[in-house]
Length: 218
Image 1 (spheres, rainbow, N blue to C red):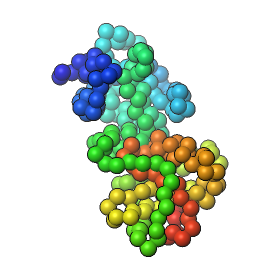
Image 2: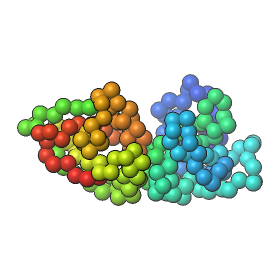
Image 3: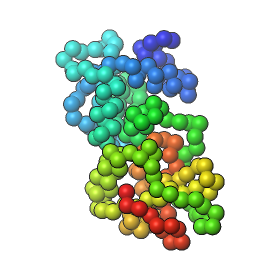
Image 4: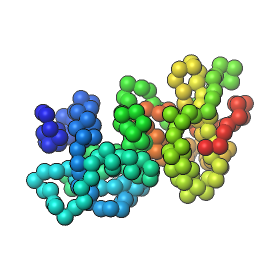
């Protein structure tokens, strides 16, 4: 199984972690056809560029681009990527925006070896270490994309804080107050929405600023 085409012939039920690793490597070295120059809204509500890999259905009428150049462009725009959308019953792969900029910065689309979670947390103030997100953890261009998203939700000054209970594993905490104090029943949905913009292994928490160090503007 040495080519991308070979990998894409693997049945859905056999596409495990090993398959995904091989797919990521091969796909990141390929050229693709762009089915549309403009992003399309996916079923999940997020914007995606649509592409197809080369195969029996290749069409010279479509614009061709390297995936490396494509990922760089998408990372600046806050857009995801759908691969082979005409495949039934599902596309071959869907990259969230967070996966795309993670690859640009680290060479990894995801890090399943690192824990991730979204939701809420309660910290004991005396036992936590806090700080601000570094440029490596949250690049300036990603902050801009996030701020644009929040602005569209009428959140004008989202605030964040990095917090850890063990000094090693950090949560990216979003201030509930800065998000307008959404009701508890909406917290999971808010966290899941934010997660689309971040690498899959990032831990995202919504929490009150009360009794915690000062949060900073995103």
